[in-house]
Length: 313
Image (cartoon, rainbow, N blue to C red):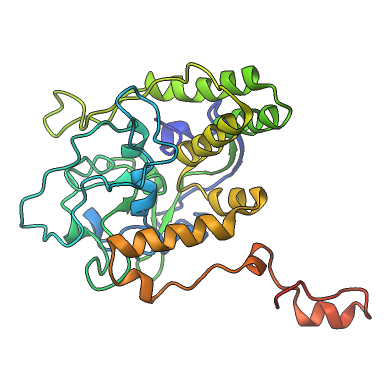
């Protein structure tokens, strides 16, 4: 719960983190890489709305009624969202079972937004109808209300967070170890590591409703009883990395490392375009050469023939 709050900086969870601070409200050593990634306008008039959870990601947090994820069918339907709904119009959030981590990751209308009050929907989101932004706001990179020591503002109003950036945290270590165990066909060890992550989420505090009298949604999460075979275990471990580490900068590198980026990203693009009509006209096709970057021409020239350009560039 505290991994992305001031209380969690340099905690036992933190394995390798970039240290950020704020100085006189200017964040002279703040997270410059995230300056454009706060909501626009959000609850406090921040900038610039360029970093948002997808509908595809939010659907991944659905559970099956027994507390387990829908590994193959999570996108068969969308959780209730307010895309196309004005903030002044009625909206009822998703009533079905959800992994509680969704509301520490995805800012959803009708749910508390990092202590700033209930997310009001469209009026907090940049170009939510006319563009490709969708209905959700990020949460992990946005400081909580009342944590003034984290907050900095740049010269033209952009936000600089003083919260450390986790390059590696303990849950990541567990899931890397689980992934290695799967490839060694040690399914019992992989199951143990994944369930350590899931049980921590199960036993954590959940986001509360507006009155503070109960959970904000129908949260259900349970550990796996078993991994019946290696293929299932591999799928479960990879899905768990998505759920636990969402919006932390790992997803693209996981997909390319697994050799599935082309198929997964193109399927995501098609699904998001189904939900957001204008999306498909602005996002191209992910090609196989995009798994690696091109080598700069000057580096090739300076190599004296030792370097050749990567395929596809």
